Image (tube, one colour):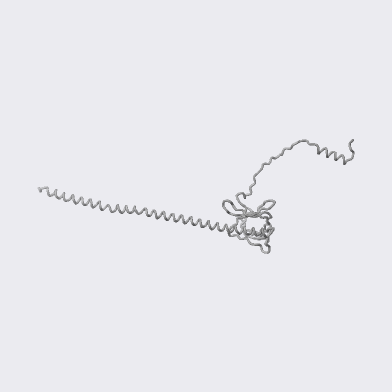
Length: 233
């Protein structure tokens, strides 16, 4: 006999629904394919990777504005050796900062806060170059100090690399000049025998003329003798 109690009836219906297995399979309407996502950092090695919060100074409002909280990295390119600073927001991965670390850059501790530091940079995070004053704040003093030391070390290394590049370029130019001078000197030495030959040729002309004159003088007495041999009419 079926129970007329509403509570027991609901329990029986729930148990029946759980026991039933229709075996129906619903195919997805849209088939999604796996897509390879690139970040642009595949050809770079991370020198440092720390969690922080970034600010930029708004000159118009004369105040600091938050750019985002996330991971800040110093990335070194495997081929060129150039280093850039990149920071993305944690959730959206939106770029907060993206600029090269140049030899002229210096990072300084923010006044009144040993967990923060500031620096100037020409940033490209918004798709165009802008001169920015950044301030970054870390969770502790150790992370801030590590970031400052690595930033300054990279800037100095890039400066030495530029000096070596200039020295190599100058050495290449000097080498080309020295090679050109040596070729000019060798060409000058090669021209000397040619001049000598010409001078020798000019000297040989009078010798031939003298021989012709000698032959002429020898032939003249013979002609005179012939004239003397002919009896006058």
